Length: 185
Image 1: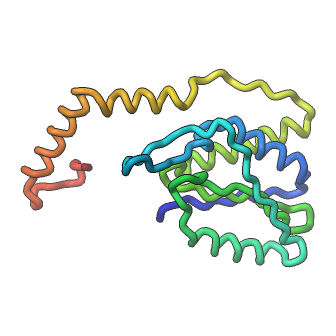
Image 2 (image 1 turned 90 degrees about the vertical axis):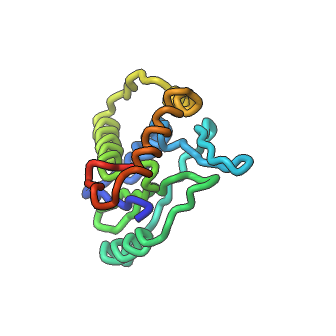
Image 3 (image 1 turned 120 degrees about the horizontal axis):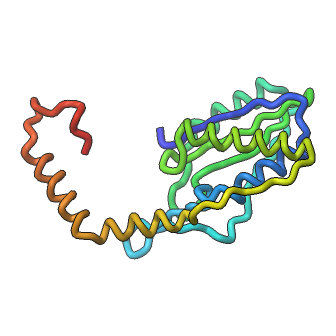
């Protein structure tokens, strides 16, 4: 599987507040701004600083929850593009009776089950805070670009070349019968 689909069911929902919380999370989660491109045959990643959050709003209020769940299953089977596009889909599906689903599909290179859970937790915390009329204070953190720069520096280092040589030698000399779960290459 190349992507991670997850849905979060919310009852007694305030749709406008939920949209506000989701938009806020997308804007503040730098990892959701990662875009991969190909330049001269080389895969490159960048942060899209001008990202406008793409939030899909779907109305299943007439068809109901079962129709949404069938739709979500079909979406989970569709691959997400990796190049020159966002590595996720996020949205809200109104299924009627003051119930909605926040749905997400992440490319596996962007998020796994744990990180998607953290994003949902953040959405819920903001949703509740907005409902209480609280102001939101964001913690200070290093720009995501810092991690990219550190990775690039390592990839261009002698240490990286030594690591490649070590792992390539190990891979060539490892007898298939001797290979155990300890070797991940």
